[in-house]
Structure formats: structure tokens, C-alpha cells
Length: 142
Image 1 (cartoon, rainbow, N blue to C red):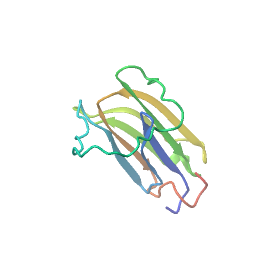
Image 2 (cartoon, rainbow, N blue to C red):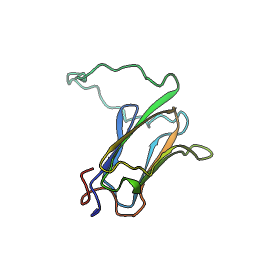
Image 3 (spheres, rainbow, N blue to C red):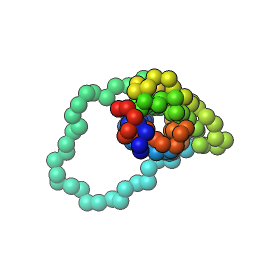
Image 4 (cartoon, rainbow, N blue to C red):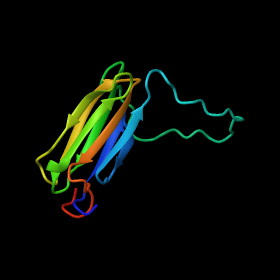
């Protein structure tokens, strides 16, 4: 982590699902193929605890439309933005690249990528540093 300070975050339908500083590369799986719901949690006795409602801004309709999920990728570059690339692959069935980016040219800048993707799919997000020294720490605040 000696060649720059940077990071990335990935949000899927508003929830943070990946992000960090990284070394040579990092990959994260996001979502599930098909209509595979999360496994049911064990049934327990009813609780007498009060129900706490979430606070914050109201939930807005999905800006991507029916059957779509919003993914937002934010990358904060170090002084060597030209070393950063990424791709987003749909891993359901025949793997296919949905979106990719880089290399970039704005050292120390921030790139925000927003994309609408089919729901009920699994995606693999991979971010790479071409010099294998990562974006974190020594050559610029990213």
C-alpha cells in the first residue's frame, strides 16, 4: 500500500456492498442469480420489544424502473489514476461484461459510475491496479 491513497465503494440498490483500499486487485460478488431469496431465518418466539422504525429520508421509487437494480461505483484515485481499471461481470449463465472502466487520467480525482442492471442476477465487481501496488497510502490522497 505504498503507492497512493485511494479507495472505492460499491452500492447496490442503495446498500453498501463492497469497498475499501486494496492492493493489486480485489473482487466482490454482489447479488444472487434468479429468484433465490435469502435463506429464511429460524423462527423464534414473538418478541415484546418495541418496534423501532428507521429514520432518515423517505424511500424513493427505484429510479431504474421495474425489473432493474441500481449500482453505483465510486472510485477515489491516488496520484496514479492511469493504473486503475475495473469491470463488472454478470456471473449468471454465460458470464458477460456489463460495464468496465479505466485507465483514468485525473490523478487524485473521483469517478462515480451509475448503472441500471437486471434484477435477480449476480455480478462480480473487480478493481485492479496495473502496477500491483494498490490505491491506498503513499502517493496522493485518494
